[in-house]
Image 1: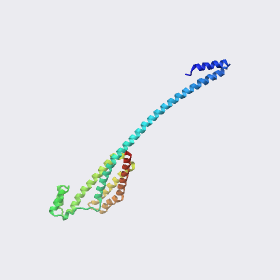
Image 2: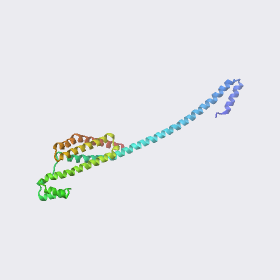
Image 3: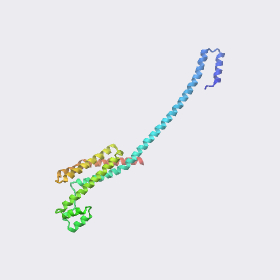
Image 4: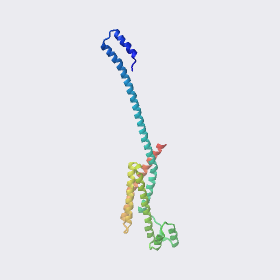
Length: 242
């Protein structure tokens, strides 16, 4: 409320000097109105500052939450990318070892009875499979047929493990990298299936070659690109954490 005493004095002065009712009314409005406006402005300003402070606090909480989420996502990515690479590397080289046309096998046919027994003893083959080799006219061919099935099974197991891991954790990968993992898995499966079909019977050397060609033309470039992408991202995360 405005101070009454100055207003009373002002009115008395106006009356003493013959001020009209209109002049007195205008002066009254001018004094009270100005004070009311000042009070109103101060109140509105205080409320505005309060609302502004509330909004700033809300935005601060929201930004902190977003940053916290981003940091957690980066930490998760930094944790799983090395594991994903290890699984891809295992699957890739196991598939390569199966479909490669330049495979080398022990010269089983040239082994004497004792050397053959020592060799078979060190293998993971079942006793029934060892007996198959012992009784085969072409021991080397029989050994290759049996050991191929082991290598094929191992390659499939590594691919299944890779696919399972990517399916479970792919949401933490960058979009393009996740697509690369899915694509190379399909390529490796395709190469493996082509070679398995080509193994026969009957044996189809063309199908076997297709498996090897798929690795060299499609899988190998993508394998190197994935390695480069992961290395870049891990270095980036490492710099952010230092």
